[in-house]
Image 1 (cartoon, rainbow, N blue to C red):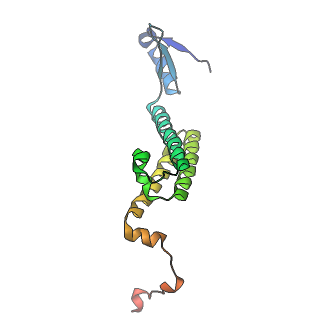
Image 2 (image 1 turned 45 degrees about the vertical axis):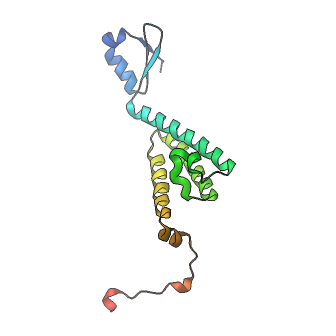
Image 3 (image 1 turned 135 degrees about the horizontal axis):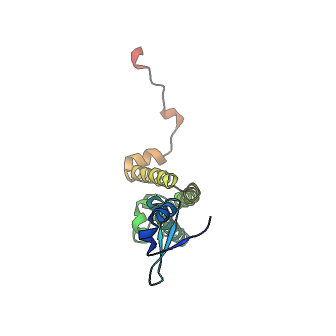
Length: 154
């Protein structure tokens, strides 16, 4: 595959070839002033923007964890929803986030990353409620549990 660079005038004369190249992944257009412009599928742009945003968030979170400021809402900023997690959970989230970023890049799609984030956000919402938090994180004695009779046995 050759890397064709179209000229601005090609937007009128070679639009089919230019669009075909863009649909295939990337089309370069050199503007009259020498500026290089790129045309690519919107889904690819969304992938690249999402990977960039969450990669930056992962680097920032790693720095926050290394400073021991995991629950500092101002340090977390837009990641403040993570404040309910302890340092061990934050490290686990970071590891899963990094794995999801790698998988999303390899897959060329953000679904695995979105699934990871949705699962962690759901858990964070559950941990915000004190009763649910005590149930999820509390100690449980097997003696606290009994076998429930079937409804038709009553």
